[in-house]
Image (tube, rainbow, N blue to C red):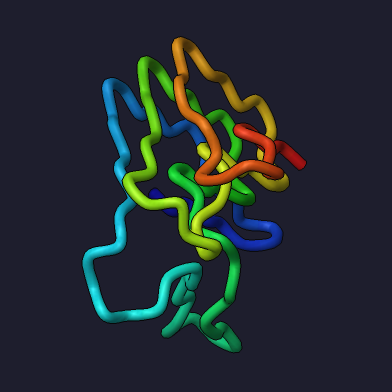
Length: 108
């Protein structure tokens, strides 16, 4: 699940309720990439795939949501990664990172 606003234009007031995200290696395409095109000046970013990845999103609530990783790939990351998100609420969130050495939940 990828949710991304932009500088000066954050996404606001989003509710995810009873959502389960399972990441597994099922395609031939590279993992750990987020395609931000066709936005002006945007590109493909190489970032480990989190179950829930959000940035520049304010007032997001995760209620009874969970993340599962079927494969422990190097390209898979945290259960939840949030960056530049104000008023993030987690009610009953469950999830572990894809592999040892990573935080399950990382908020920056």
